[in-house]
Length: 199
Image 1 (cartoon, helix red, strand yellow):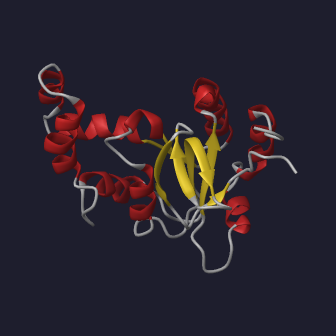
Image 2 (tube, one colour; image 1 turned 135 degrees about the horizontal axis):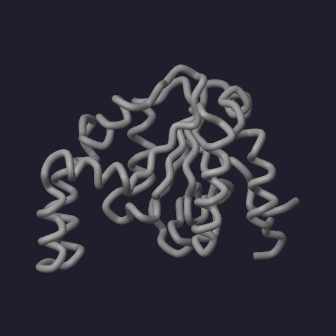
């Protein structure tokens, strides 16, 4: 895309923003949630993971929540992981999603295993950054817009940053397009952490 900034340039720009929660809190607007999305070309996934590790290393107050890893942890905790592995050889992905994952996670419910995990783990003191990763790995079992909506009732003081392998079109339709091709859903309350298009 014309005037698209390099990933390196954008990561250099967010280093300071991610260095302290207070910096991100100042970027937010009054009476708005301090939710941010860093969208990127899915082809850059491995580089983004490496750069994200550096951000976490430089700020011990970043709490990373990898959606896919959380899913695996929850399945292990409930004793379902072996069942999932077995069922993967017997059923198609759509059946697994509707008959196993959706009932297990119940993400549309206010109280569900994923949100209970966040409630237990997030240190919501205004000093930490809640960093959401693993969005692409967890799709379609976990939808990013659902997580963002539900986190509104779990995180009040800390800024939330989601690393998003796709495009967040805030200026036009406020639409999350996973992998730059799947129109996932609209989400209206997050700000771009760093614009992809140069001025």
